[in-house]
Image 1 (spheres, helix red, strand yellow):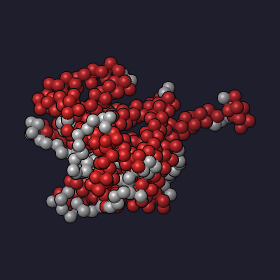
Image 2: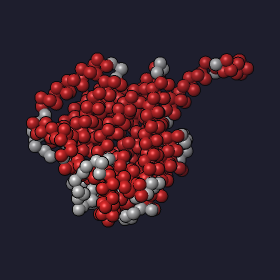
Image 3: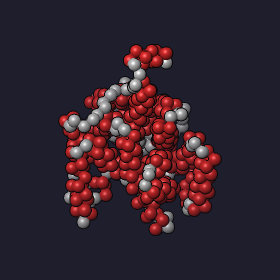
Image 4: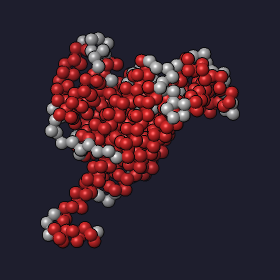
Length: 446
C-alpha cells in the first residue's frame, strides 16, 4: 500500500520537472537527501528515482528557454578539478569494482547537481525554497526518529538511514540542518511553516541525543558555540542554547551520559583506536600513490588492507592495537579523501572548503548595511555553522561524499553571485535617468 501511495505522489511530482528546471532541482535535492527508496519495500523500491529526476532536469536545463545564469567561479572550478581527480583515481583504483563505480558516480552526480544549482537558483525566492527543501528532506528523518523515541520512552534504537549513513552520520546531518532551519523560520511568512520548523528543530535535537553518538555530542557543543557567536542577538541566543543544554541534561537517559564518559578514555577505546589504524593505512596508501590515491574506498577492501598492514610499524609513534583481520572504513572525511584521491584530491577538497568559507565572509561583508540583502548575510552565517559542524564531526566519520556539503558549497557560490548582481543593480539605479556623459563622469569619480 505504501508503494502504491508513493507511486501516485511520484506521478504527480515528476511532470513538474518538465515545466521548470528550477522545480526539477528541488525535486532532485529532495530525492537525493531523503532517498524515498529506503522507505519503500515493494515495486517502487527498485525504481531509480534519483537518476530519473536528474535526467529530466538536465534535459530541460539544456533544451528549455527558461532563464538560466551559468557561470564558472573559483568554487565551481575547484569542484570541477576534484571531479577530474576523482575520475583519474577511479580509473587507477587499486580495488576496482561495483562499489568504486558507485562512489565515483556519486561524486560526479554531486558535482553536476552543484553546477545545476548555481545555474538555475537565480533569485532569493529560489534560494529560500532550496534551503527549505534541504531542511524538509532531512527534517523528515528527525521527525520520524524523534517521535518514535518519545513514544517508546527512549527505547527506540536509531541505526541511521540509507541516504545518510549510520547513527553517527545521522546526528551530523541533523545538526547541519538546524542552522538552516532557523534561517528558513526567520524568513518564512507562513506561521504554520515557522511552527513546523520549530517542532522539527526540537525533534532533531532529541534524535541527535538518542543516536548515542559521541561525535553528535561534540557537534552539539560546536553548534551551540557558533550559534551564539554568529547570532545578531547574542544574549537571546545564549539564553536559548543554555535552556536547550539544561533540558538535555535533565531529560537525557543515564545511558547517554555513560556513553559520553567513554570520550575521555579514547586511547583505551577499541572502536576509536580501530579508526586510528584505518587512518594510518589511508596515509600509507596516499604515500604510495600521492597524486591520485588508491581509488574510491580502497582501504575498505581486504586485499588493500592486507597489502598495507606490514607498513604500520613505520607509524608507531602513535601506538595502536594490531589491525583487524577485516577491513574498515577510513572513518574520517580527511583520511577518506586522502586515501581515495591522494594528496592532490585532499588539497582540492580542502581548497573547496576554504572557498566556501571565503564566500560566507564575502557575502556577509558585502550584504552588511544593505537591508535588501539582510537575508543573504543571515544565510551565510547559518551556512557557515553547518559547514563547521560537518568539518568537526566528520573528522571521525566517513562522510567525504556527503551530499548536503556539496549542495551548501554550491548554494554559497550562487548566493554570492546574487549579492554581487543585486549591488550592481542598486548602484546603477541612481544613474538610470542621467545623461550618458554625466553617468560616465559619476562612475569615474566613484
